[in-house]
Length: 286
Image (cartoon, rainbow, N blue to C red):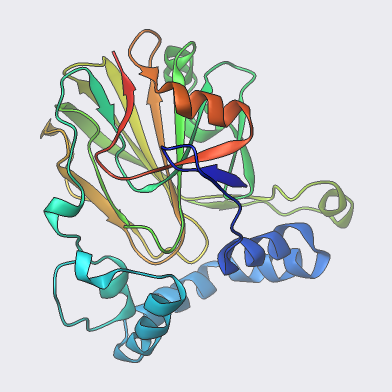
């Protein structure tokens, strides 16, 4: 998918990750391989390897291949690739827009935004979801109708820690484990949707934008979604948690009349483009 920065400059860069995922979900051999790769045993094996010392051999190559400016991050000796992947950035590299009428991005990534209705279908990590299938809660999904859904896609080169988009009270965290659906060969010829990603979400009664739902969506190869708090007061820009290894996604639901998304994000989405954003940057307003 194409994306634009906030100045309107357009990019059409296909990463190794994008090409590999396309192979897994659109090729018969790839779909067979995917069935193995999303199994619990393989996922656990990946997680184990990413926490070993030998996995650090991947770090230098990853920095070069993905043009990581390592000087932007806190200096540390990494004992595993996962430690490197969840590295902390220096605070001055992600300033947070603290204006009360501004909703900020909870993470780095490429964002699209959609008006929420019972007909909305969004594609997240090559899997189609309705709002109800994302939340698995009919009442909650109906409460969000008429609002907006931000989908922020993180790739492996992004900063994989995420924060709160506004201050307020956070309720408990809800975790939805990934599900694999067995399908017959005929179904495989007609759809690539046979798995759901693990995900976690929390409801936030925000100080300035009404009720928000922030959801973290894991992906193939992600060891864990790690959230720090639940049932507590939180501050805008405060770190909420982080993803371990793998590409991931943040979904942010806002209620009707709570937030108006920035016009460039709406326009880019309508034109089939994602918008490049950084944690703490404005993405909507009241």
